[in-house]
Length: 182
Image (cartoon, rainbow, N blue to C red; front, side, top):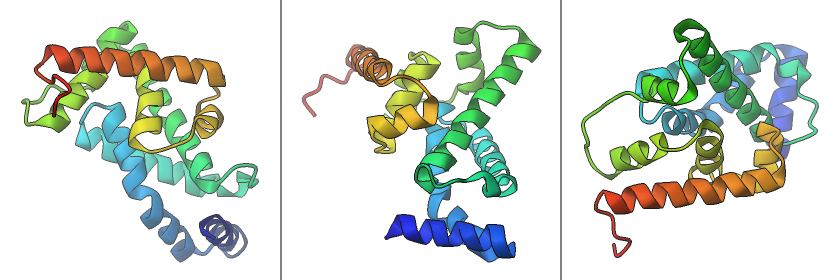
């Protein structure tokens, strides 16, 4: 039913330029998109908000290109994924740094203020593709098939990224006092 509601809202936006219908889509998905960026940027709230805003602007300006070949949420995550990697590419072009240095650049250094920050620190140890797969699968509860649609990464590779990412995060957390007995 939710998918049908999304399609009806998209149709209202496309046909009638109904901005209130788009507002409903934003309200429905803004928390998930912000959370996705919060995890991708390792806790940088300001950057996450900027990237989420850019995602919704792109979604609005390109909503007529939504063909209902996937769910609206998958289409929106694909835009968010592209916005994030566009941001990473611009960082690479302006700073001419390797991927590890960029990870450290956009994952802001903050005080260790609890378990969330420990998770963000563990996310910093992952490669960009691993972080994306971990974030979508474990934190956003997106299926492997949808991750394939969002990222364009083959299913087997997504599974490998999930396995390696999970192992790296577990090792980091274990090394930093989380023994798995909690």
